[in-house]
Length: 226
Ligand SMILES: Nc1ncnc2c1ncn2[C@@H]1O[C@H](COP(=O)(O)OP(=O)(O)OP(=O)(O)O)[C@@H](O)[C@H]1O
Ligand SMILES: [Mg+2]
Image (spheres, rainbow, N blue to C red):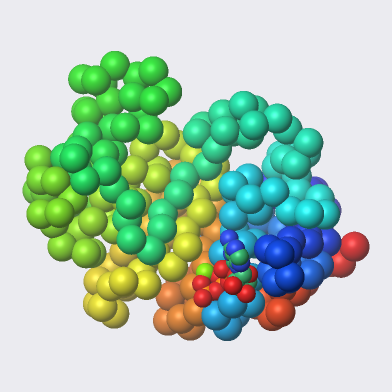
């Protein structure tokens, strides 16, 4: 079998005396939607942050397209995050001073795309997520569900290979949560992007292709036991 797109083995991470990860293994294939489930405090977010190159594990192995994520220097890792990864968090984390279209255009602007071209692309994505009607609003002037769909547009606008989503519907009612999940997963599938989704709601995990469970910092995915 080919190596997964993103592969982590035997991850360990402690914060002071707290063990957050205690031998977690996970593989993400290209284009798949993987749900990471488990109780509060079990290490889901820590695992996601390690996979995304935001948190450095104390020990273990992480490979993205065969490249060693832990051995990379900060510059290389942040370039990778900017070009290959997209992020959606529980509270959209849109920039409050910018309009929705400017928020979605921002990752393109940071990669050197000119304003006009970036905004045209941003509008396309807002349209795809059915929130183009709030393009000119600031994030404070849209609903929670609209804000999360703007955040999904921002995560996908650069054409990433992996979207990391930590409780993306955690602040929404069930109807809006379902809408965000439906749009997130269908937009990712259309772009052939993988989604790594952290949730403790089975209703949300139902949108995934596959689920793994983290308990006490341990998760064992398929045959990846070290
Ligand atoms: N930056 C940090 N500093 C100290 N402890 C931390 C830090 N991040 C996580 N922890 C601890 O590590 C453990 C795992 O936390 P993590 O956030 O990964 O859990 P989680 O499964 O995402 O929980 P939740 O479902 O509540 O979001 C917890 O005991 C938590 O308190
Ligand atoms: Mg968490």
